[in-house]
Each structure stands twice: as C-alpha cells, then as structure tokens.
Image (cartoon, rainbow over all chains, first blue to last red; front, side):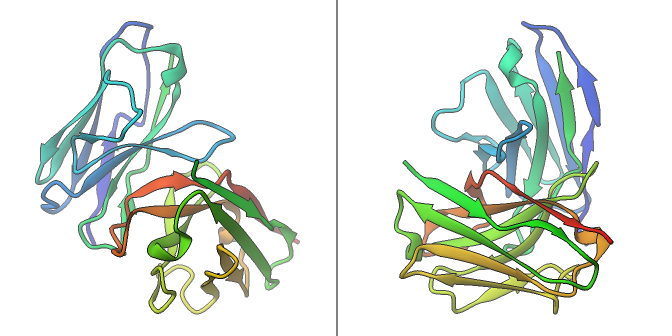
Length: 107
Length: 122
C-alpha cells in the first residue's frame, strides 16, 4: 500500500512568515494530490488538488507544488486565521484514498 | 450554496449499531459521488466509504468492510452510513463528503459536513 508521510507533524510560526509543509508518497502518484485545511469544530476545507490547482476562494498566499513522490504546500505571509491542521491526500487509486497524518500549524 | 447537514451519532456500546445521515442541498445530489471520512481521537483523517451518484457502486475501507453499509436516497437528497458491530476503534468524528465533479468518482472532496461524534464505549 502507498503511504503518505507529512512533515513536520507540527510547527509554530509567526504572522508574516513563509511556511512550508511537505508530503511524501511511498510510490509515484503523478500529481494526484490534494491539500485540506481543518479547523476544530468544522469540516475540513479543500485548498487545492492536482498538486497545485487552487480551489476557488482560497487565498493566493496558499500554493502547492510537486509531482511523483514529493509535494509541498506553501503559505506565504502567514495569517492568524491559518492556524489549523493541514492534510495531504492521494487520490490516484480512487476510490481508495489515503490521507497524510496531518501537520498542526500554530502561531 | 452547497450544504451538507449531518445528523445521528452519539454514544453506543461495543457491538451496537448507529446510523448517520447527511442531507445535501445546493447541488444536484444524484449527480455526485458521496462518502464518509472519519477522524479518530488524536489521529488524522481516515477514509471510510464511498458511493456513486446513482448508488449503484459502493466502496469500503478494509477496517469497516462487512460492518458498515453506505447508501443514499436521491429522492430525499440524503446519504446514510449504517454502522453495525461497532468497536472501540470506530470512535471518532465522522464527516460526510461530496465529490468535486459530477458523473465521475475522483475522491477530491470539495464540501464536507460539519461532523458528528461517534463514541463506542461500555
């Protein structure tokens, strides 16, 4: 089975910082990768899919890159409302999908 | 505006049953695959089950296969998850999810329900 490994598992940053979260797949998944933001008490929010396609309404400070096995979520100019847990998800073998273990982001 | 409104959940003893419901609005419900994702306490997201728009095909993760049943009533715009033979490891927050595009199953979830808590404990 393909495994998805996120790093770091948690991080703390300051308002205005540039933050990078990585996601590594144990096998080539092309660009079949999505990123979600999850805040407590709410359902997760889709940020982007196809590794780098931003979902409408998502601020442009969020960006994604990567292909194959290594992927990155970048938040430029971190804002207080970005405090959340972030998950990557592979979907190349839909409907059988796997999420990364999550990265908790604090300010 | 797309909305997914969940109901059901609660406290149940091991071996018991629960049914979760998820009402969809603001989109053509029957055109979209739907599913369930859960988050066990202290852990990350875990896919549980999916169903095509027509309801003709269903899919389950190995951890719940044979115990949970996903279904939908397109006339009522409602998705269900019947959970039987519940175990402690089924405890968690359950989310219903909507597939981003119609007429295909991509497993990219553009809308999520608000979540409902399921606790399996004696």
